[in-house]
Length: 387
Image: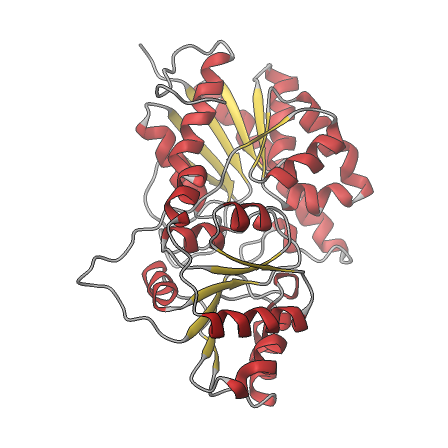
């Protein structure tokens, strides 16, 4: 019995295991392939130090190597030319792949632009598709008048809409009027062995993209408000982004250089070691669904201090794994940091249960269980998995 031939179209796909380009996608693909799915990935090319070899990952060139399509400055005419080229070359490559391989189904990660390719394949070839909304497509792109109706049509035309957050699903449902289903996105983390374990430090870590929208300046202001009261505590930012230089300048000019460090990009092992050595992971974001860093903290059994954005409150409070504060409120974030230090609380055993709900293998099985129910009956999902 032949396996399902699936085309997975994604806005981002990691070049290698330490690449920060949506690393959960490769874990999800691995989960599908381990269950017998013949999965081909189509994704835009981006500049990387090297690429892991995978003949079933197809990257199309679109005239830009260093930036994603979502980070292009919309005020520049050249950006619109690049977007046009992205859409043309991406779809041409998708159509050519389908003519060659005759896929059974298509899964688009992000409703735009990947979902736009999937809808065009459906219109031209009758290829059925599903959409997995992952945040920026609904939070950002769907707010643009020029894209809102297009994204709505993509969602309405799909066989099923998945979202990696419950709150995100409510927004997508309000936009398109169709039912949305939770499908978690989680980057798989391998914990250090006991022999490799690193000692705990009086340290807060903030991993992820260094952007204003991620609340990195709110956190710096909050930590600065308590730093002198806790001179043996420190804060480390892990990651890169457009706001990194400004953040590092503020660290220097605020006199916090002894207690606050910007470590920049770290390979996966280095980042996970830093998280394991910390007392807590701080996620001060102003706009998100459920950041990958939350799932990484859960797998590494680190409590979190998060803002009330997306599904962060839902999971943090359901599993009793941390503290929730309002977004964009440095004063309340400072108070939460202070309480965390002073209370020295044990956050118990909620981490494993939380990870089970977010596990990438659960996501793969849930998708395949639903796919089998659509009539593509060459997939036999794991017993007990519900859509």
